[in-house]
Length: 266
Image (cartoon, rainbow, N blue to C red; front, side, top):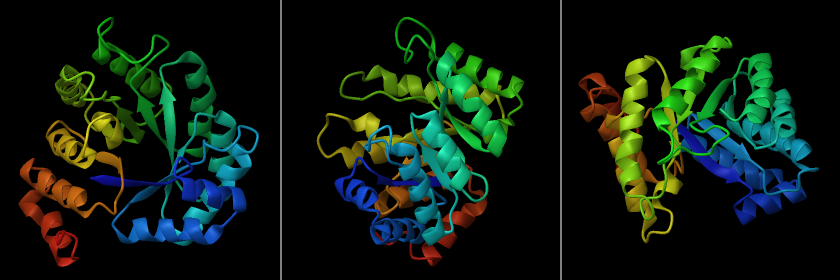
């Protein structure tokens, strides 16, 4: 399971203030804490600053977070200009978050992915929006994966995001999302699946329980990367256990190592 730490995001007031003030210490502390909690990548996002400031701010955030943690980053922005600045500041192979089947987004982001040899989060949507009711999510997802493969990306560099909707507003969508991952996984061996957990619980109380349960169910359907708070020790312990139960951790070796590392004592 690839753990992508979500905490360096200017949607959080303390990170926004740190980016505006160029307070490296705050960002460095968050980066190191997530690394020490077991994150493999750090997602960095400064979309809450102004559009004019975002490229420079994202480049600073990339240098600061990667310099402190030594980890590769998932560079997250709706702005192609900001993605370009962040990728130029990054050392090694990043994950670009994100591309989609929307024509303008695809045309702007694909050249950046190829230029920098990055992996990419592929959002399961196109110019019609997020699938639901009117057109099949599988067709949208398969078309995007096929297009990325035809344009030269390796299947192992694609992290498909099925864009799960909230349980509170669309209960049937949860099972549909799990089935979508299972079907695409069968059709494209080696394709990765990623999700941010917060959407599934939006509008519900005690959201962490819904998030954790969805992550466990997702593992059984092929989920192998999660954008999450790695400081949630219960969630990360459940992910280790889920992979063992799903047959993706042979003889529970990673689970046992997590125990030895003190990561199951929550």
